[in-house]
Length: 58
Image (cartoon, rainbow, N blue to C red; front, side):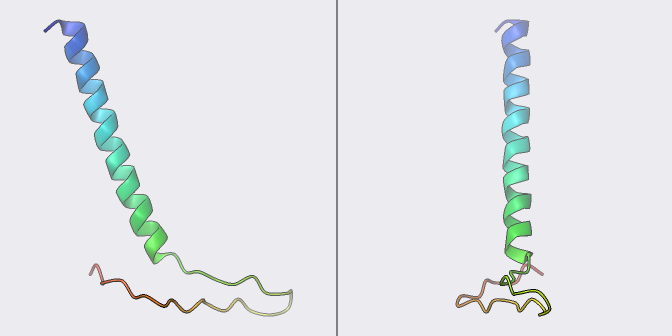
């Protein structure tokens, strides 16, 4: 295997690991983000009740 191929494989592996980590962080962040309905001005936002509960991570 040539040096160029080894470097390209190393960069490709690094990018795939970085993409997987980013996907995991965004998945967790989206799960814990509070969802609010859009209300007319002057009223407070009311959290939306979820029909399905997820298992706690901690």
